[in-house]
Amino acid sequence: MKDKLIIFDTTLRDGEQSPGASMNKEEKVRIAKALERLKVDVIEAGFPAASPGDFEAVQAVSQAIAGSVVCALARALESDIDRAGAALQGAKRPRIHTFIATSPIHMQRKLRLTPDQVVERAVAAVKRARRYTDDVEFSPEDAGRSEEDFLCRIIEAVIAAGATTINIPDTVGYSLPHEFGALIRRLKERIPNADKAIFSVHCHNDLGLAVANSLAAVLNGARQVECTINGLGERAGNAALEEIVMAVKTRQDVFPCDTQINTREIVPCSKLVSSITGFPVQPNKAIVGANAFAHESGIHQDGVLKHRETYEIMRAEDVGWSANRMVLGKHSGRNAFRTRMRELGIEFESEEALNEAFARFKELADKKHEIFDEDLQALISEQIYEAEAERVKLLALHVCADTGEVPRAQVVLKIDGEEKRGEAEGSGVVDASLKAIESLVNTGATLLLYSVNSITTGTDAQGEVTVRLEKSGRIVNGQGADTDIVIASAKAYLNAVNKLLSPSLRKHPQGADV
Ligand code: KIV
Ligand code: ZN
Image 1 (cartoon, rainbow, N blue to C red):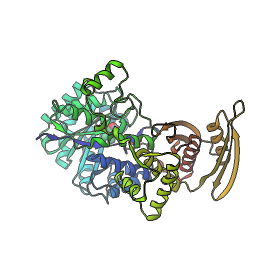
Image 2 (cartoon, rainbow, N blue to C red):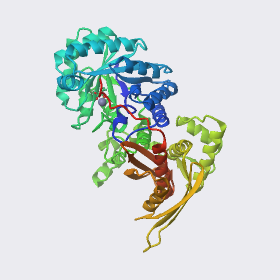
Image 3 (cartoon, rainbow, N blue to C red):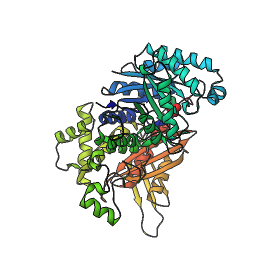
Image 4 (cartoon, rainbow, N blue to C red):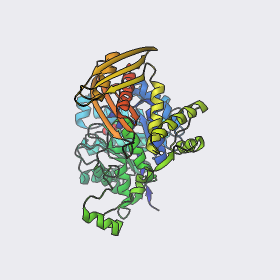
């Protein structure tokens, strides 16, 4: 029997720390459900002490998830741990993950604490976390640049205090694979009570080595890897879950362990995260990039046609690429629709919600003959966004783009219940439409990102638009989908505007006052 490699997903916590990737509570629950379908062992749902929004999101994920452990992050502070414990109250299997920095530079310059004080705080934090759950993880932040003797000392102390997982983060992505692997091996050999805890790793990708470092650690005894979908995360990101899982699966001749991940859910989950965060996946990205299984050169195509394994080490369908198939059409009934939604993890709270979604589905099926899973996900996103979009609603949009004429747009919005009309010119119809909307809502926000993606293939595909707006340091993402990309753009802009108009749930800068 091989060992189990625990997959700890931190898309909702470290992934959300990517600038611009903020997600609201409903979006986090949708991603958590997709992660549960993927069968990740642990979902790190957020950092409850960071903001009321994070607290509520961890609470909501705790209530929604039964199949995975739900984890909350906390600094080594009583108040943080109590917030994490409270947020996890509804979780079936809660974990508290507490951390404190251990590198000389972090202890001296950021924490202004002596090594003795750091050990004392870490031990106290783990003991306090054990009041809430038996499943406690400890991370010595910036372990990659910490002194090894000190790491041994603090890790031995926190295991004695009740930590059951020891996570070694390469916080700044500084390590190289051979040295990081050797560090894990030596820590496990040198710490007398190391056998009482699972060793985990959490690698950042500043030098493009997050996956390589994580795999080197696994070869040297780590049995949990912390990673994110599409490698999202602080700065250059974290180790990509899909790459870790598929490397371990594909090279079972080398790895002494395996994961329980349902790999067929990888691509659908990647698409959902990309659409919610507005972070596109580069076409040449391993496993989940659009070209990951495309063969361009004639020699390769010929080889694959003769024998697939000449140029392919994995099967596209094993990571979920075949998911992009026709599932429903114009003549599909309400039952087929509800069943497929259920398979996608979407349950309707009431018959009215189901009826509303079904009506939208019929409308879409009139415009587009084949409805794919991705279309259904977009449809649900829209229903959720519209339910949130209380203050400003799109009633009508008219655009004019004759050749040689300046493009114009006229828009009718309902703002706080009052109908308003606006119009504007622009460099194209999208530009004119967004300007017409802005002339009525007057947010004064800066547009940081505008991107259009085709959800499926064909010219009748829905265009999915992401808009990122920034106002006074607050960044929000808006999404909209429609077979007409001008309408999709207006919907996305209004979705972002409505988020900007909702009360700010600002975060504390992480670690600033540890
Ligand atoms: O990168 C890091 O050190 C972290 C810790 C909180 C584990 O994200
Ligand atoms: Zn991190």
